[in-house]
Image 1 (cartoon, one colour):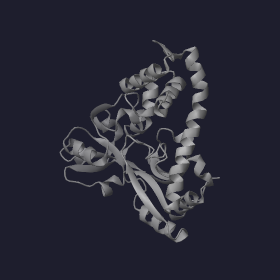
Image 2 (cartoon, rainbow, N blue to C red):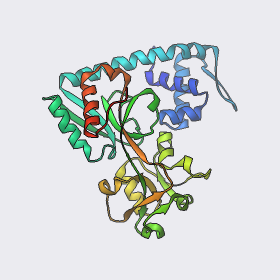
Image 3 (cartoon, rainbow, N blue to C red):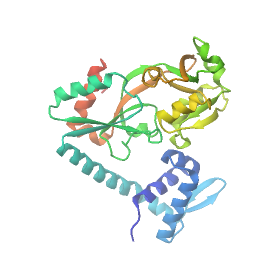
Image 4 (cartoon, rainbow, N blue to C red):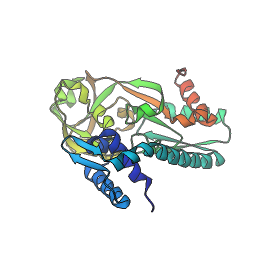
Length: 301
């Protein structure tokens, strides 16, 4: 009997969270899709893995056995796939770096140039991910490291070095009444509809809605988008406003959208991120050091 490891991964998330809703947010999938996958796994195994109630998802005796063994099974599979992909990239002398939007800003080119000096003959392959993939491929082993905006889901399981901090601003339709302001208190935006990342991105979406800085007021969602071009179009169309890093005004300038400083929200941070297994990869560590050197930082030990 063949069981897709993805089904086991979904099962493990539900078992750990005790809730389909929380597990779906953690996995960046919809709750109905997750429910379908759990039922598929139960059908393949011919056993019930959970009992469902208003309190959540409780493991059956059979489910408890699988829950105890699933982490080791998944870790072995992940390590094997990651090592295989990494070996292929090393053989080709390619370092693959994931990123979301303009994560490292202008220093990216200087970082790559510095890495070329440290590792002659190596090429850095930059891979842009959508917002529904907040680790930019790290969690799947598709990249060796990533330049990411913090926080993001799963951050606690990865290595992170902060490279830069910049203020957040707000992107508005050019016709918006607040577009003429020099700076906007965030409280004046609480009742505005926002253009947001998909719900499955969890903490990433919440951060860019400043969900914890609204004095308890829930955000209004005017549109949901998964990439910068759609995000800009939704704002220009008047479907909502959106928080953005200050550098977005330079990287994502377009007619119909204006950027204004926001008062009362925390700044955005960018980090270089890599999996713990890459601590022993000298090429990845050289890239991390290049990032820190270009940004005038020293590594936190």
